[in-house]
Image (cartoon, rainbow, N blue to C red; front, side):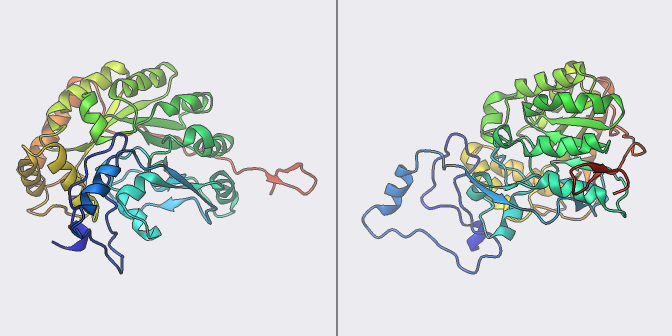
Length: 371
């Protein structure tokens, strides 16, 4: 077993509020460490002492740019904004975990405890929009990590970004598993009335017990459904994302999740099968062995069937849906359920024509219409 796939020894029990306690070495590490029992019971002692969740560390960053271009044909937007790197929600399956490797941090425990905050996100967005060459394109907020993770309550970075989007009438979509989006309805609802915003709530399960170990610091399933209701009442187009679909874990709930979302006011739906890129694979498999040992082998066998015999297939067109018989059956189930509950499979179409560049500030503090 390679260093990246070697789990902690002895196995560390799960901690409340964290998706993993494994500070897995990232794939660029030049050094690796391993536990060693010196005969004095030090490994067991270290495991027993780790009884409290690791504290979250906020690391401020002044970003050089805030808009990221999308080159994947699998995704229905051109640009994305991620106010945070890392995510305290702790979702064990998060495909963004490997991005912490570029920071020389662990995609495991560090990803959920060391959160990078782009404190100048709104400033950089305003600068990007003011560029003479910028043209409005489909934009998604929080595509990699949740823009409404817990630290947003205090810092308001996402709200400052939405304020710029509102000022410039720039359309955007938003995917979140947090009720925090309700705080910003004063900005989002007026934009929705002009065809400038659509929100998608990620609802992976209706089982609170499963949600607590799958997404430990995210809002409960029932709270997310109430957020769908609140958005719908405010006139905001709202959809549901059942992603990822994990065979034999949340996959049996597919129809129930879509029905509950539709009853709450969702009007469209989409889903993505489980993806296990890079370090996510050993992290997820350890989680699976820890919480679902009775079906772990069965789950991974089905995952491999979806990806041509491999744990993961990164090819465009295949990575989001899978291939083969089981992928086709999942797609048929999803489509039939969405049709039955009146959920459109297409994303909400947003209006790009209303965009206006931000007014430039002159030295005297007044606004220059022509920048």
